[in-house]
Every structure is written in C-alpha cells, then in structure tokens.
Amino acid sequence: MESTTAKAPNLVRPASGAAAGTFLAHVRDYIALTKPRIISLLLVTTVATMVVAAPEGLAVSTVLWTMLGGYLAAGGAGAINHYLDRERDARMARTRGRPLVAGRIEPLHGLYFGITLGVLAFVQLAITVNLLSAVLAMAGLLGYVFVYTMWLKPLTPQNIVIGGAAGAVPPLVGWAAATGALAWDALYPFAIVFLWTPPHFWALSLLIKDDYARTGVPMLPVVRGDEVTRRQIVVYAAILALFTIAPVVTGLFGGLYLAAAITLGAGFLGLAIRLARHPSRQAALRLYLSSLAYLALLFCAMAIDRAI
Image (tube, rainbow, N blue to C red; front, side, top):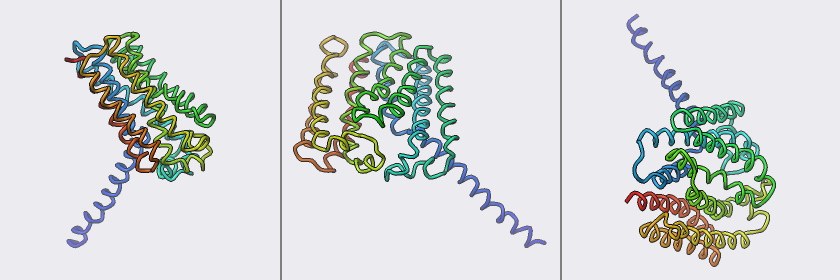
C-alpha cells in the first residue's frame, strides 16, 4: 500500500505537465497567427505619430488603449491572412510550418479568431479611445484582407505598391487617437510608410522569389525579373528619401528630424544602390533588415523632434 501510494503522484505529474505544455504551445500558435513581429513595427509608427500629433503630452491610458486596439486590429488581419493564404503557404518553404498549414490549428478556428480580434479592436477603440480611430483601424484591416490579400496579391506585380496603403494606416490611427480628428499633416507619416513598403518588401521578395514562383503569386521578381526589381527598389528608395524632407519644408519638423531623415535616407538609398550594382542574397538581406531599422528610427526621430 505504501509503495502504491508513493508512486501515484509520479503517474499524474507527467500527464499534467504534458497538458500544460500542449496548452502553452497552442497559445503560442494563436499568437503566431497575429504576426507579432510585424505588429511591433506598426505600433512604433502608431505611437510615434501620436507624439507628433500631440507633442504637448498624451495620457498614458490613451497610448496603451491605442496600442491594444492596434494590436488587435493588425493581429486580426494577420490571422485572416493566414487563413486565406494557407494553400499558398503550404508551397513555400518559409511558411509551410505556420499553424494552419501544419494542422496545429483548424483553418476555420484561425478565421474565427481573426474576425473576433477585429470586432474586439473596433469595440475597444470606439469605447476607450474614439470612434474615428476605430473606423480607421477597421479600414486598415479590411484593406489588407480584401484589397491586398484577396484582390491584388494574386492579380498584379504592383500588389504591394497599391496594397501597401493598408499597412500605412496605423499612423492615421495614432493621429486620430491623439487628437480625435485628422489633419493634412497626418498624411506625411502615412505617405512615408506607403513609400517605404515597396522597397522593403521587394528586398524580401528577392530572397524568396522561388517560393512565390511555386505559388503563382506574381511578385515583381517573378514577373519582371531581379534586375527590374532592383532598379525599382532604387527608384522608390530615392523618392522616399526625398519625400521625408517635405515635412521639414512645411514646418512640421525641425533640424533634429532633418538630420535624421538625411542620414537615414542616404544610408537606405546607398544600400539600395549597392544591391543594384552588386547583386547578391547578402545585399538583399542587408537591405531588408536595414529597412526595418530605418523606419523605426525615422519615426522615433519624428517623435523626439516634436517632443523637444
């Protein structure tokens, strides 16, 4: 009897630990559906734009509620995108391990999860921030799902150029959250993200063009070739670098931002030119990773310039 009693707990604990591990793995899979790494950059642009719109100061609660609503909206769009792209993802080495493709989450469960996040985002932003920010967040979600993923992505190599507008909505959400309205100046951060998206995404597409070719998605390197893609990256990087100076001309930003915009723009354009002149996977990867830092640092410079 004593030996039986002593062994009983050992029989239970592994099963309990396995169940806990399975639950946590399931939670991680659902979090993965929201594409958290992408959202982190979107939230930087959102919060920085809030500071630009209201440099006199913001309530911490407003910032936190806006970040939560932004995460829910972007996460909902990401989860729905996982559902819509699951067949394409199964043919791509980069994405075949995603939760819906690998069967760790039922596809319809992923879709319902995304829709639920979107609804929660709208309700939460409308109640805790304002209705305009909620409407704009939903516009971004619907644009990403219907305009980019369902319509443009399988249709044209310019998909990321036009569809990139959905990814440029977070700054507008931030402006509306901070002020309760939109102003002409809000178009500057929106346009900067819009112009940044093509060279950023095309650098990635150069790295995984074979995957896109297998899925039939007409990304620019697949349809027009690497050389054309590299030239387009240089063109957009140059336009972006020049455009980032425009808010200084209109008086929105001052010298600190101007110095950052010139330095970061020159670096970004230099990497794009280097990729065009000396093409390699390493150069494409360097440009792609640098583009992430470029956008984050530029928006931080906006916020600091306005704050001081």
